[in-house]
Length: 391
Image (cartoon, rainbow, N blue to C red; front, side):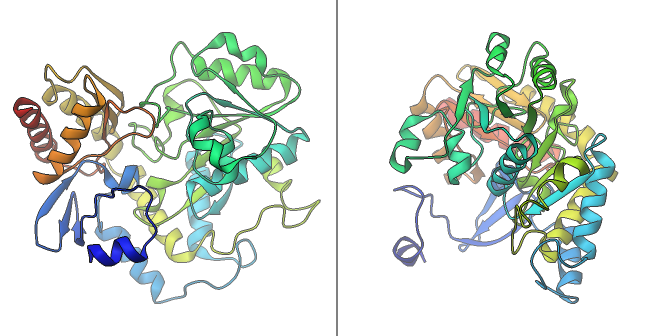
């Protein structure tokens, strides 16, 4: 398949990993030769309940027997999407009771930007340096990494940047600002957590000048940090919450949630202010509903914090200089990018899936399924440390 893959399927890098996949179950992915790979990445934080979780698969199969796509989003009442948005509202702080379902995290970012501009009547968007919110034109515009932006200019105007965790930059948020958009935990930059009550200070500044605070929970959301939403750790309540990745249980989804008053501004003047054909797809929504029910009714979130400590305990090595992040959103740092590259590539040879972060070349991504067992964690850490011993 590799030759056809390289010829017919568009590539995102010159040298894809190109593993030929047979099937996946639980914490493991299997290639076409029958080799098992312990998954410490979970589809880049997307497979919250591991691979082919029985409750997700059962929900999908049941929905397949009823109907697939029937009408563009928001026109017909479809039970899976309705139940999913109701459950999200139950677990979000008031007044964030209205959710718009879309197809991916970056599409949800686009919708949240439009909502903020429409609701405030302002145009300025403030994002953080070293942020990553996706790769569509609006999401890309939020990035300050010129090397990635330059080939696609011009992007959307009126975007400025502040330093994450720098309270001194908050004066840049003014009455001209429509929205401040931040990752609750900066992902591509190296799993950087907010410090010194930073998110609360941003919220206070936004409230003072009438700006909207958007928090990107695409990676930390849906239990990965030990709470359903990462912002629950940091004494902060956003005006718009963006989710994706882990919400879908392995199927593509995005969502942005806000107050009913704010969200209603997208429905008129103009009508169809934001529209999607497949957002809220009933099969995807059924998978997401099953995922959210399992995360919120089980002990997985509590266990996530225990598993974090287990990883920190077993991933001690002279060449691991730091482990950043929270819960099962972790990044282990080596001395240099070359060592990190070797660890990730050699781990795959030894049956362990690791991956990189976007902007931080020394970081090894460790974002396994929330369902991973303690024994699997210890085994994965053993493989990493043994590789470091060899190197």
